[in-house]
Picture 1 (spheres, rainbow over the protein chains, first blue to last red):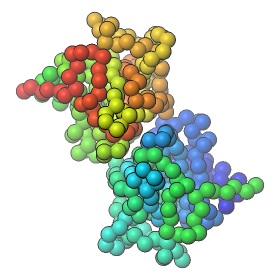
Picture 2 (cartoon, chains in turn brown, orange):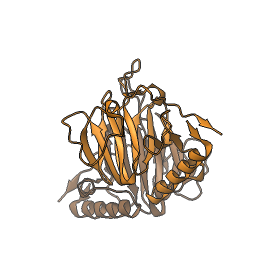
Picture 3 (cartoon, one colour):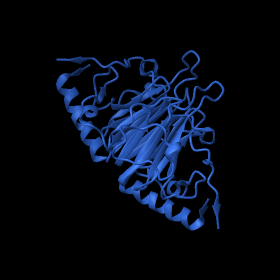
Picture 4 (cartoon, rainbow over the protein chains, first blue to last red):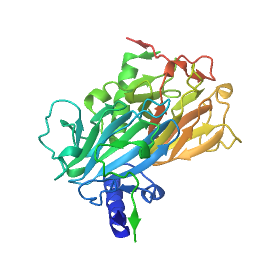
Length: 180
Length: 180
């Protein structure tokens, strides 16, 4: 869970980074940036800030912000009925994204959050700067970590059903609780 | 058709506008900006410059550039087999987009290209600035025109099959011919 104060501070910080990255957004949009702690209650280590620009029953376009030192937990997009699962292209706008996918362990720049070795199992490291992108096919496990200056990126995808994403860490809860 | 010289000049001009808009792109990407004259051979009036960032059999993300005074001809995305047709969200990054869709004729800021009254039939005018966006459902006729300073925008869509787009102007040919 997050306190209201933590939520507001993270939302404002993310809004500043989105603007700094040169992405034009409206005030209304900045006011609905989601702050996700994935139920882990340590937002500075594991979390993400997400602005959904467009979401229909066919596609989604989002801006994802990770603060310096912040990791978006390992997950994958499973098949849902007739949908083979979400396909997602990540494209970096500002900062460096450390992206981890299946393959040989090449983790060098990044780190697994302390005490979470079992929750981060794929460790092929890709470092993506501005203009760098990767397409993640359905079912592919992945996790993201910001470089030292944080990262701002787009996610272009097929329909997003975030609550159905599957996480390696059994403690993850996709819906963030905010307490006053 | 376009001459090689026209093609190169348009590609370089579009590349400059994309960079000026603050969109990070690689040199490789700038070198494959498409220049479309829609077979009309008057690129300064009717045409578009298009950079495909990502295209799979499920989604596409593009950057579309229109120069000042340039109009992207009226078209729509038809059903293709099991696909109900392309759904497209346009989001402006820089400049003003004059967007025309079905509805009451409110065309004021823009203009129908000279001698082309029959080829531009939908005339409800929407003016979108940076951060402005619209989602076009399949089958919806639409055309775009740049404001005075040109426009740079994203197109986030379901699978793009451009050669199957349908145009009101029977003279349109979607594949651009370049002559030396």
